[in-house]
Image (tube, rainbow, N blue to C red; front, side):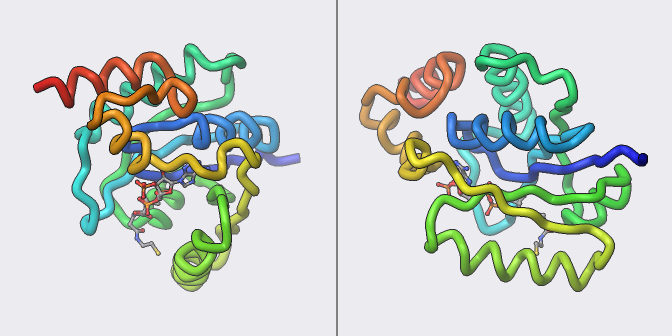
Length: 165
Ligand code: COA
């Protein structure tokens, strides 16, 4: 049987426990999982791509499980073009609430039109991760609040450093 390769794309600005939960569960479903840090031109990022990749790698290493089949990369193209380049079969996205659905549905359909052989699957976020978003984490950190419930120590430290400047 051929091996299934999936991509979990996102901005990860910064990575949160919500993302790590999706990575953990996806890594059990596929033979190989590529966590791909992308760039959305409509977004202004707090961390540059290199830092977002580094924080993801670091957070994965310190998370509860060793992720042997997970690779972290970045890409600058259309997601489906990147997926074709790396021969991925599946795109994974997390769904937190109905509010995510409309945009995900739009992106999913566009990706399906652009690359009919690549499937998108959605994993429901664990209830305790529902309120988490990268923006929320950044806002709490900006006011010097405690983000340890939402993200890893490494990310918390990096946010502190960023906002103390
Ligand atoms: N847990 C916690 N937070 C989650 C989450 C989860 N399971 N799933 C999503 N989020 C949050 C993120 O933290 C982020 O929060 P923020 O808005 O506060 O920053 C938000 O949901 C959405 O972010 P993300 O999932 O990273 O998506 P995005 O809208 O930034 O898109 C790409 C990122 C890379 C997938 C997208 O820009 C892309 O595909 N780019 C390539 C260009 C392309 O192909 N475009 C056409 C697409 S049809």
